[in-house]
Image 1 (cartoon, rainbow, N blue to C red):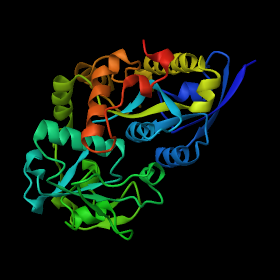
Image 2 (image 1 turned 180 degrees about the vertical axis):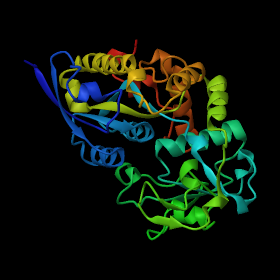
Image 3 (image 1 turned 60 degrees about the vertical axis):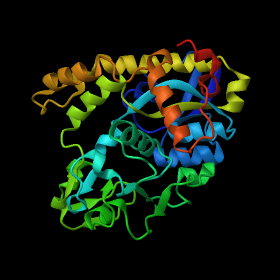
Image 4 (image 1 turned 30 degrees about the vertical axis):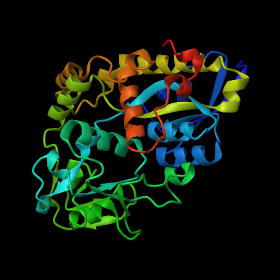
Length: 336
């Protein structure tokens, strides 16, 4: 019988699912799972600290910790993407390549979210697009945003605007009221699109909305060769009062997360739908670009990634200083 019961909230993630469904168990711990969309999860946890263990936006976590939030992270990063490569642009904007974004109007779901943090950082450092030389348009309202829970205000010197509640990034992009937005390229080519964040239908000439990186796989290959990692999206945190009472759970949870990921990796190929005829070839290509484990856990394997996101957060004015690793992660995991 478990010695400890922990409430645990997370979106569905195949690398975490064995822990959520009880196939993998943390030593002496019973997980009481709640499945929740990340946007709702983060808002609830940042505002109310409802759950003892929770999935958390990496960017919002950095901001919250810099402001004294009572939570500590585990070096568990099962959600990663190339966020900067998900941008699409309106062809009437005159944009031909990423460096042309200076002076343009760029949509973001939420200014402080991890996706926007990575996109700004990579566009600036890799393509020369200064965060101060573009105009940012944020979709989420204060009431629904993570920033509403952390006390976000636009950093000094930023050209910051809000998208009206009767519009979305999708509608503004297709109508060329903004020039760029993280609207996935396969959605951009649709005749009618429902924006993932607001479900406001966008209609118009979607042939004029094109991916900023037409070869997303090629851009991913370039990024990994240059930086050595896939940008992280979320981590998992333990509420401070729970951690202080039983600090040993940090290692137990980390080991359970690692075991869950390993279990899913072993059956990856057999879980790919058989209708994808070239699944083995695609998996081999993915591994040739990203390595055998695109989702490494632990601090040693993620040092470069963490140094980068911590630096981006500070230079973008989201955190007042560069946070230290030992301020962010449970002491018992610092050698992982």
